[in-house]
Length: 243
Image (cartoon, rainbow, N blue to C red; front, side, top):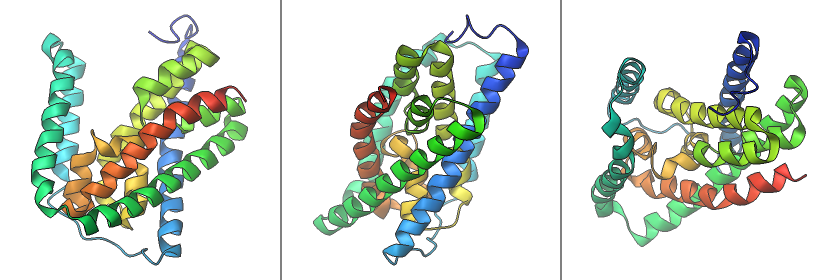
Protein backbone atom coordinates (compact mmCIF):
# COMPACT_ATOMS: atom_id res chain seq x y z
CA UNK A 1 0.00 0.00 0.00
CA UNK A 2 1.28 3.46 -0.87
CA UNK A 3 2.36 5.31 2.19
CA UNK A 4 2.21 2.16 4.30
CA UNK A 5 5.61 2.83 5.84
CA UNK A 6 4.57 6.36 6.78
CA UNK A 7 1.04 5.68 8.02
CA UNK A 8 2.22 4.52 11.42
CA UNK A 9 -0.64 5.87 13.51
CA UNK A 10 -4.38 6.38 13.38
CA UNK A 11 -3.91 10.14 13.48
CA UNK A 12 -1.84 10.06 10.27
CA UNK A 13 -4.42 7.90 8.52
CA UNK A 14 -7.20 10.22 9.67
CA UNK A 15 -5.30 13.28 8.49
CA UNK A 16 -4.65 11.68 5.09
CA UNK A 17 -8.32 10.88 4.60
CA UNK A 18 -9.39 14.33 5.81
CA UNK A 19 -6.93 16.05 3.46
CA UNK A 20 -8.12 13.90 0.55
CA UNK A 21 -11.74 14.83 1.24
CA UNK A 22 -10.83 18.50 1.61
CA UNK A 23 -9.00 18.53 -1.73
CA UNK A 24 -11.66 16.62 -3.66
CA UNK A 25 -14.61 18.64 -2.32
CA UNK A 26 -12.82 21.96 -2.77
CA UNK A 27 -11.77 21.08 -6.32
CA UNK A 28 -15.35 20.22 -7.28
CA UNK A 29 -16.81 23.40 -5.76
CA UNK A 30 -14.15 25.83 -7.01
CA UNK A 31 -14.07 24.31 -10.49
CA UNK A 32 -17.86 24.48 -10.70
CA UNK A 33 -17.79 28.16 -9.68
CA UNK A 34 -15.10 28.97 -12.26
CA UNK A 35 -17.07 27.12 -14.92
CA UNK A 36 -20.17 29.16 -14.14
CA UNK A 37 -18.20 32.40 -14.38
CA UNK A 38 -16.65 31.42 -17.69
CA UNK A 39 -19.97 30.31 -19.19
CA UNK A 40 -21.69 33.52 -18.07
CA UNK A 41 -18.93 35.51 -19.71
CA UNK A 42 -19.85 33.74 -22.94
CA UNK A 43 -23.57 34.20 -22.34
CA UNK A 44 -24.21 30.54 -21.50
CA UNK A 45 -24.92 30.67 -17.78
CA UNK A 46 -28.41 29.22 -18.04
CA UNK A 47 -29.55 26.03 -16.39
CA UNK A 48 -29.86 22.93 -18.56
CA UNK A 49 -32.61 20.34 -18.72
CA UNK A 50 -32.14 17.09 -16.88
CA UNK A 51 -32.43 13.65 -18.45
CA UNK A 52 -33.66 10.48 -16.79
CA UNK A 53 -33.53 9.95 -13.02
CA UNK A 54 -29.94 10.38 -11.78
CA UNK A 55 -30.52 8.12 -8.76
CA UNK A 56 -29.61 5.15 -10.94
CA UNK A 57 -25.96 6.17 -10.92
CA UNK A 58 -25.84 6.83 -7.19
CA UNK A 59 -27.57 3.54 -6.34
CA UNK A 60 -25.20 1.65 -8.63
CA UNK A 61 -22.23 3.33 -7.00
CA UNK A 62 -23.45 2.55 -3.47
CA UNK A 63 -24.13 -1.09 -4.36
CA UNK A 64 -20.63 -1.35 -5.78
CA UNK A 65 -19.11 0.12 -2.61
CA UNK A 66 -21.03 -2.30 -0.39
CA UNK A 67 -20.28 -5.39 -2.47
CA UNK A 68 -16.62 -4.42 -2.78
CA UNK A 69 -16.31 -3.86 0.96
CA UNK A 70 -17.67 -7.25 1.97
CA UNK A 71 -16.74 -9.57 -0.89
CA UNK A 72 -13.75 -10.39 -3.03
CA UNK A 73 -14.56 -11.27 -6.63
CA UNK A 74 -11.30 -11.96 -8.55
CA UNK A 75 -12.87 -11.57 -11.98
CA UNK A 76 -13.82 -7.94 -11.30
CA UNK A 77 -10.27 -6.63 -11.64
CA UNK A 78 -9.85 -8.32 -15.01
CA UNK A 79 -13.21 -7.07 -16.24
CA UNK A 80 -12.50 -3.35 -15.91
CA UNK A 81 -10.82 -2.81 -19.29
CA UNK A 82 -13.37 -4.84 -21.31
CA UNK A 83 -16.16 -3.06 -19.45
CA UNK A 84 -14.77 0.33 -20.46
CA UNK A 85 -14.58 -0.80 -24.09
CA UNK A 86 -18.20 -1.96 -24.02
CA UNK A 87 -19.22 1.29 -22.30
CA UNK A 88 -17.49 3.40 -24.95
CA UNK A 89 -19.12 1.35 -27.72
CA UNK A 90 -22.62 1.69 -26.25
CA UNK A 91 -22.25 5.45 -25.76
CA UNK A 92 -20.87 5.77 -29.28
CA UNK A 93 -23.83 3.89 -30.76
CA UNK A 94 -26.34 5.94 -28.79
CA UNK A 95 -24.83 9.31 -29.68
CA UNK A 96 -23.65 8.62 -33.21
CA UNK A 97 -27.00 9.58 -34.71
CA UNK A 98 -26.88 13.10 -33.28
CA UNK A 99 -23.29 13.92 -34.23
CA UNK A 100 -22.95 16.43 -37.06
CA UNK A 101 -20.26 18.86 -38.11
CA UNK A 102 -22.16 21.58 -36.28
CA UNK A 103 -22.39 19.53 -33.07
CA UNK A 104 -18.68 18.69 -33.28
CA UNK A 105 -17.76 22.37 -33.59
CA UNK A 106 -20.09 23.40 -30.75
CA UNK A 107 -19.01 20.47 -28.58
CA UNK A 108 -15.36 21.24 -29.15
CA UNK A 109 -15.89 24.84 -28.04
CA UNK A 110 -17.77 23.81 -24.91
CA UNK A 111 -15.16 21.16 -24.19
CA UNK A 112 -12.38 23.72 -24.50
CA UNK A 113 -14.07 26.12 -22.07
CA UNK A 114 -14.76 23.25 -19.67
CA UNK A 115 -11.10 22.24 -19.75
CA UNK A 116 -10.06 25.84 -19.11
CA UNK A 117 -12.41 26.02 -16.12
CA UNK A 118 -11.08 22.70 -14.79
CA UNK A 119 -7.46 23.86 -15.03
CA UNK A 120 -8.14 27.24 -13.43
CA UNK A 121 -10.34 25.81 -10.67
CA UNK A 122 -7.90 23.03 -9.81
CA UNK A 123 -4.96 25.44 -9.80
CA UNK A 124 -6.74 27.87 -7.48
CA UNK A 125 -7.63 25.01 -5.14
CA UNK A 126 -4.06 23.74 -5.11
CA UNK A 127 -2.75 27.20 -4.30
CA UNK A 128 -5.27 27.81 -1.52
CA UNK A 129 -4.96 24.42 0.19
CA UNK A 130 -1.19 24.59 0.07
CA UNK A 131 -1.44 27.51 2.48
CA UNK A 132 -4.34 26.19 4.55
CA UNK A 133 -3.07 22.62 5.01
CA UNK A 134 0.67 23.24 4.93
CA UNK A 135 1.31 21.05 1.88
CA UNK A 136 4.20 22.03 -0.36
CA UNK A 137 3.07 24.22 -3.25
CA UNK A 138 4.34 21.95 -6.00
CA UNK A 139 2.81 18.84 -4.42
CA UNK A 140 -0.49 20.61 -3.73
CA UNK A 141 -0.76 21.77 -7.33
CA UNK A 142 0.07 18.31 -8.64
CA UNK A 143 -2.57 16.71 -6.41
CA UNK A 144 -5.22 19.20 -7.50
CA UNK A 145 -4.33 19.08 -11.20
CA UNK A 146 -4.74 15.29 -11.46
CA UNK A 147 -8.21 15.87 -12.97
CA UNK A 148 -9.59 12.62 -11.54
CA UNK A 149 -6.90 10.52 -13.26
CA UNK A 150 -5.83 8.79 -10.08
CA UNK A 151 -3.98 5.88 -11.70
CA UNK A 152 -1.55 8.36 -13.24
CA UNK A 153 -1.40 11.12 -10.64
CA UNK A 154 -0.91 8.85 -7.62
CA UNK A 155 2.19 7.00 -8.89
CA UNK A 156 3.64 10.18 -10.42
CA UNK A 157 3.37 12.17 -7.20
CA UNK A 158 4.71 9.20 -5.23
CA UNK A 159 7.76 9.09 -7.50
CA UNK A 160 8.56 12.76 -6.96
CA UNK A 161 7.32 13.43 -3.42
CA UNK A 162 7.15 10.09 -1.67
CA UNK A 163 4.48 7.43 -1.03
CA UNK A 164 2.46 9.44 1.48
CA UNK A 165 1.73 12.26 -0.95
CA UNK A 166 1.29 9.72 -3.73
CA UNK A 167 -1.54 8.18 -1.73
CA UNK A 168 -2.97 11.64 -1.07
CA UNK A 169 -3.00 12.31 -4.82
CA UNK A 170 -4.54 8.91 -5.55
CA UNK A 171 -7.34 9.29 -2.99
CA UNK A 172 -8.07 12.90 -3.92
CA UNK A 173 -8.54 12.14 -7.58
CA UNK A 174 -10.42 8.91 -6.91
CA UNK A 175 -12.82 10.83 -4.68
CA UNK A 176 -13.20 13.54 -7.32
CA UNK A 177 -14.42 10.91 -9.76
CA UNK A 178 -16.82 9.44 -7.19
CA UNK A 179 -18.15 12.90 -6.29
CA UNK A 180 -18.85 13.53 -9.96
CA UNK A 181 -21.25 10.59 -9.99
CA UNK A 182 -22.98 11.83 -6.85
CA UNK A 183 -23.23 15.61 -7.24
CA UNK A 184 -23.41 16.39 -10.97
CA UNK A 185 -26.95 15.01 -11.43
CA UNK A 186 -28.20 17.46 -8.79
CA UNK A 187 -26.17 20.56 -9.72
CA UNK A 188 -27.88 23.36 -11.67
CA UNK A 189 -25.83 25.35 -14.11
CA UNK A 190 -24.28 25.52 -17.54
CA UNK A 191 -22.86 22.53 -19.44
CA UNK A 192 -19.39 24.05 -19.15
CA UNK A 193 -19.59 24.18 -15.36
CA UNK A 194 -20.94 20.67 -14.98
CA UNK A 195 -18.51 19.09 -17.43
CA UNK A 196 -15.51 20.82 -15.86
CA UNK A 197 -16.26 19.13 -12.53
CA UNK A 198 -15.54 15.68 -13.98
CA UNK A 199 -12.05 16.53 -15.20
CA UNK A 200 -10.46 13.93 -17.44
CA UNK A 201 -13.06 11.29 -16.49
CA UNK A 202 -15.74 12.82 -18.74
CA UNK A 203 -14.43 10.95 -21.77
CA UNK A 204 -14.93 7.49 -20.25
CA UNK A 205 -15.95 6.64 -16.68
CA UNK A 206 -18.40 9.48 -16.02
CA UNK A 207 -19.50 9.97 -19.63
CA UNK A 208 -22.81 8.10 -19.11
CA UNK A 209 -23.65 10.52 -16.29
CA UNK A 210 -23.22 13.51 -18.57
CA UNK A 211 -25.14 11.91 -21.43
CA UNK A 212 -28.00 11.21 -19.02
CA UNK A 213 -27.95 14.59 -17.27
CA UNK A 214 -27.21 16.91 -20.20
CA UNK A 215 -28.45 14.82 -23.11
CA UNK A 216 -26.74 13.15 -26.03
CA UNK A 217 -26.08 16.52 -27.67
CA UNK A 218 -23.38 17.15 -25.06
CA UNK A 219 -21.54 13.86 -25.50
CA UNK A 220 -19.06 15.49 -27.90
CA UNK A 221 -18.35 18.27 -25.40
CA UNK A 222 -17.79 15.75 -22.60
CA UNK A 223 -15.46 13.63 -24.70
CA UNK A 224 -13.57 16.70 -25.94
CA UNK A 225 -13.04 17.95 -22.40
CA UNK A 226 -11.81 14.57 -21.18
CA UNK A 227 -9.53 14.11 -24.16
CA UNK A 228 -7.94 17.56 -23.79
CA UNK A 229 -7.29 17.06 -20.09
CA UNK A 230 -5.95 13.55 -20.66
CA UNK A 231 -3.33 15.10 -22.93
CA UNK A 232 -2.57 17.97 -20.54
CA UNK A 233 -2.29 16.05 -17.24
CA UNK A 234 0.85 14.00 -18.11
CA UNK A 235 2.56 17.27 -19.03
CA UNK A 236 1.36 19.55 -16.24
CA UNK A 237 1.61 17.22 -13.23
CA UNK A 238 5.31 16.29 -13.66
CA UNK A 239 6.04 19.90 -14.60
CA UNK A 240 4.64 21.41 -11.39
CA UNK A 241 6.38 18.74 -9.31
CA UNK A 242 9.74 19.98 -10.56
CA UNK A 243 9.08 23.62 -9.57
